Image 1 (cartoon, rainbow, N blue to C red):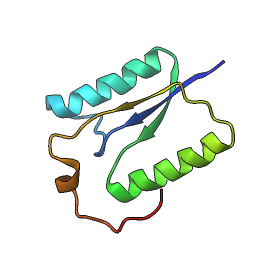
Image 2: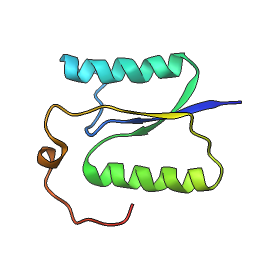
Image 3: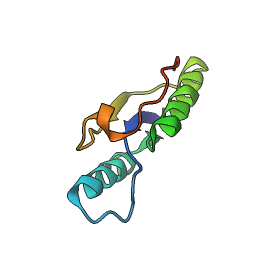
Image 4: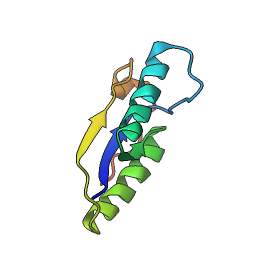
Length: 90
């Protein structure tokens, strides 16, 4: 059986990051893959993450099994990191 997880970061992942706040999330994501997990990434700006979450919800409703979710925090409060967007149903 395939192991799968959701990897959430409230920013764009940068494989070429040079600071710890960018390097650590990339190393964690790669570590989960090296452990054999299929990683379903939720990253980017708010509209991108919203669409990725919608897609994952559809896939889960269709039978995708997820073992766990890892969520990385940003260095700024979520509400201050991006412009506020209208609330809609995820």
